[in-house]
Image (cartoon, rainbow, N blue to C red; front, side, top):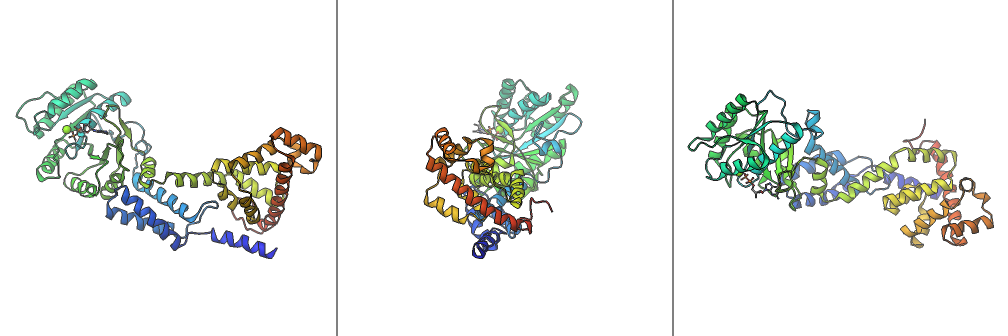
Length: 451
Ligand code: GDP
Ligand code: MG
């Protein structure tokens, strides 16, 4: 007995807290995942340091491995980095417009970014979104005087989306057009003016100076950097230069429908501290969504399965069921119904060994089950056996005489031997639980137990 208890303690101690070695090992994988997702190197380094500080010493949920636990911590950290700092409740929850419009109209919104990043498309999408969702009267203005067709492109987009655009007057510079747009909006009672600027293929001084001048003149409430999700290691330079030279308030990530893992989101967020407001998920004009940190975080890590597993484990274990079970254990009760519940959880989790590891003192049974090649089908059979019993029988297995066992076997499509085996297992489990339950009274299960 002492030996067995020793193993239980061992197990519990081992599952206790994340060691630095656990964390380092798991973070090696995470680092690779981040780099593969095209998160810029300096940002990766910052993230890893932040995560390490947070993870070492953290308690590991029973039923998951330390590595899985670290991935979950990383995931939570990414979400915090991606979503932190937003004080406006509506914006934080991704409700409403998705951008800040809290000012007296007309509210100017300035779009900046490289050529081909999706500024003009986003201007059109945003106009549709603001009109449909927020019933806003929107005026579109193209400040791109360098490409001959640019202003025309926006005019056509305006027609398609039934949005007003400023009249094209050849020869006017960007600043003049911007001011004219604001004047018109004031006169004609527009709520929002979206200013679409010219872009270059690379960051250059003239583009920055022009955008900065427009910004100073119209004082936009939001200056949004529109950037392609496929931007790799350049994302840091790009975001930093726009932020330093123009000063942005938010980011729109486009082409999130492509196969990029979205690392640019982290890089740009990390460098500017500005929130990612919206994401473009297609060429169509309704393909603009509110940014959801958890989705991008999962995508960046590419470890959604693990995160889901840990979340499910946390859900299943931490809640009342666990508390109820623990309470029962202290009383030395473990009915066949409890066993069926465990089976159900097993199936929900899909990670069989995980849950077994979670049940205290189960090592011996686990070995037997391993030998018996337990799988989902077997769990389903065992569940069926218990379901074929009456409630009375589930609470008092002593009632199960030979004829009742035959009935149950028939009802569950199994054999009497199967039924016998299950009952034996249950008996073993409940005996062990009783022992562990006694320990519980002395405070082995600190959590979930009444004092
Ligand atoms: P601009 O030079 O920054 O104004 O870029 P445009 O708005 O003209 O967009 C360049 C190209 O990218 C166009 O062919 C758009 O249809 C496409 N585009 C823009 N946003 C998205 C998006 O979210 N997803 C996809 N797949 N294509 C997009
Ligand atoms: Mg354009």
